[in-house]
Length: 405
Ligand SMILES: Cc1ncc(COP(=O)(O)O)c(C=O)c1O
Image (cartoon, rainbow, N blue to C red; front, side):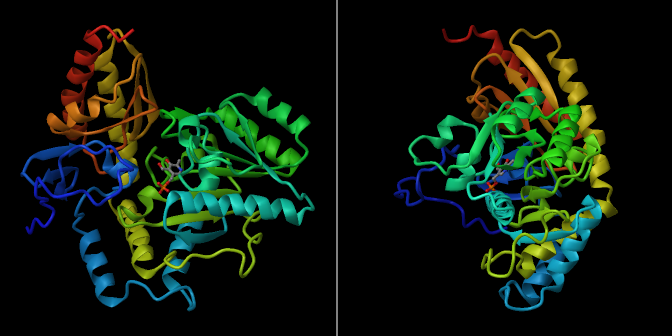
């Protein structure tokens, strides 16, 4: 295997410093394991932040993508797009929705959703449409999606923010009923079914059902950001399916291409015809390579029952975390669904990222205090036990030291 990633120790950095990075560089991966350029091996509890659905170098995905690259990567949206049709049809079959638009990332899918909401409002004669969004939400880093995001740290330095958002707390039906009474310009509700970056906070099934009802009563669009929790991660194709409801607009990305950038916004009949020719577009969106990655990801997931594995292994991982961390002082809550799990501690725990990597495990820490596990959905129960065996002693060690005052 070539290792072109080695950087000489004294070379000047030219990549902007938008990330605090750990020093290791990853070289190659197989299944749920990744090796760095020094040959050190890591168990992947991060999945590229909920992206690598099929793990690394999946033996069916690699040849399919190689074949596609040798045939066509990109030709633009000027021409008929049979691969887009194929992936859109599959997403509609899985979701019960009717049409999809393809883009390249989560924030782009959310931008499209927000444009649909605004145009939906304007089409109804509302000149200043408002969208209900959430405390602790995360929808992306563009100006509109960071404005919709409910984390003041992400807003800092980027004002003036985009207007037209009304913010409410999650799982509070009364707060939404109140907004319905006081804000006649609301056109849509926009939320993550499980808040990911906000700390793995699930919307309750009853809450989602109530929001669906309120949206129907007021003629609002229900827009569910499934960028992180969708594509089988929770053990259903889409996390909202646990609540037995359907959105009008569903942005997707992350896991859809198993690592190849693909975004989609999938719509039902109330929203699918809102954008007309010329209203929206993207150069790369829906190109042949991205579409093939989406099609093959979903095909392999079905063939190998990957979603069922996420449910099964996720339940085993959750049970093992409860078993190992039961009664440990400083554990606030262990929560989540399928292979989207969070362990909330009573203190900031960002240093666990480096300590886990040193111990051969990739994880993330989100909302300062929540250890998040979003591994590839092909994780085995044995690998889940290995995650627990590495991670839990590190958490206990951290919690054994009194917190900083
Ligand atoms: C729920 C949710 N929406 C949107 C995004 C933004 O996606 P991207 O980073 O692909 O723009 C993320 C990324 O973490 C996310 O978790």
